[in-house]
Image (cartoon, rainbow, N blue to C red; front, side, top):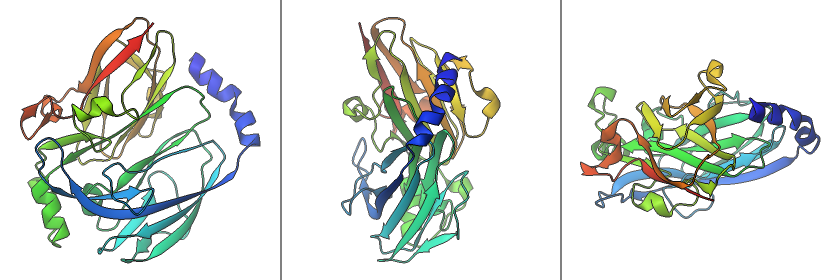
Length: 287
């Protein structure tokens, strides 16, 4: 509750400094080589024309307006949308080699998913979905964009064959495009800090299935839920998060130590059957 009151208390200050920002994104294609180098066809929104599996993470203040320029650097047609925000003049279709410009005001605290809505959910399942955090917090923020991957499904999409959802059978599970142990070297997602710090975790499920994230050692408190606003201020250690849902939670560590945080669906802590090469992390708290 104290954290929620803090957000409300500084809301007007941040709004007074609201600005117009520009954000340029490229839709790139490549391959993902998690765990055992499966070369899964992959598409992502990147901050340059160089492909990487990490979709660009965007952070804006409450009241800011973002002017997006989206380049399609792929040979396929793609789209652009933001869940739970109505975009003017949408839907947006971006031809190969083309670009669009979209101006979007962000008026409310929360976490939002921008994604490819063309041939939904197939092109989105190739990986093209990222996170926008709208917040006035000055606390450290860690970002978890969680996805699962079915190589056969992705290959068929790139070949123009859209398999039915009942054939979706993922074997790879990632955080920010990485699997454990590579996640342990990712400063964007690895939760680190000191006792009594307030540590924010921005979580977006941009995959196709529900996941359930479990914290060892500490409880976390929900400050934003895209699908269940009534859950705000609930303190728990396990957080189910459905497809295309976002959560903002905060942790205030009461002790030092290293504790795991992972998907409670243990299949998702593996990669092609290899444990624990999936959605698995270590929280590292010092004095």
